[in-house]
Length: 207
Image (tube, rainbow, N blue to C red; front, side, top):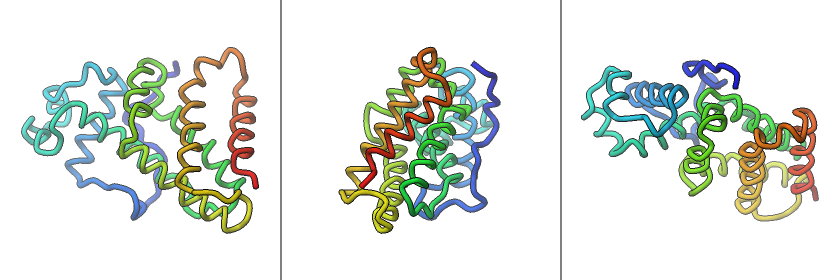
């Protein structure tokens, strides 16, 4: 696995989109330190005491915000997801643009310091926090997909259908492809993987 810098931020817009969660300065600082620890050491070894030391805050300061390590991890991954989504287009109006952005999101997800580390060294944690239940991170992604699907439907390039239902299937396609990418890398090249993922989503959305 290539060496990733945990402290590097995902690409972000200068302004946070109004429909996405935001955090105050203290919350953001604590969650960014938690993300760096997760990237460096995984989720299993994260403790509130260690996070308090790294963030230079008291343990009560953390516990006033999150009641457990599990909640901290979920909040840190949600913040990471939001930072990634802030770098993507909101004015998607065609099927081609939607598919291109979804593939770009899959790439950004894999290349992110935190999610990439989990995928490479702790895939069971990635599954636990990303796939086992629909949490806030997933709902943020589903909202983004549904909005894009509605815009593309209005232009006639995406088939009719319930945008919320279709967003669920799109998310499943992207998550499954990302989760399986490392496992099948010996069977399919990088360019071919992108091509087939694009075709899978384009075919699903085509009128």
